Length: 108
Image 1: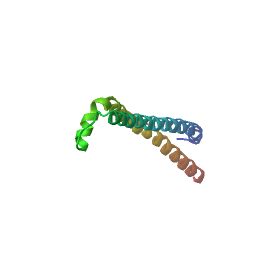
Image 2: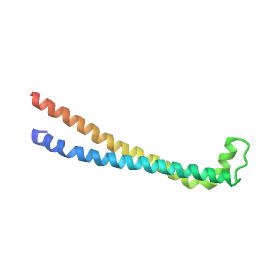
Image 3: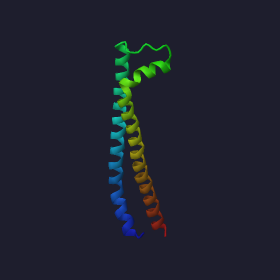
């Protein structure tokens, strides 16, 4: 990697990092919204008197048919958040590495 490659990368990577961070923040926001919808549905089912279980496991079993799709959506979104986090951290580390390389090039 020569100086011009490092300079070019140092110009490009911050924008890629910004985009990855925006995607990550959007994914976290969507996950929070999905969790809110799931909780709302659970409260709705309980409020409608459809849950009569004596313990937590029975209540969860009674809620499941009404919330199954939302629970699956939350799981998919949690996975999506993890994938976007990987991309964000990749560009963050890449930028840090490029900055270190640039500093070393000025020393040499």
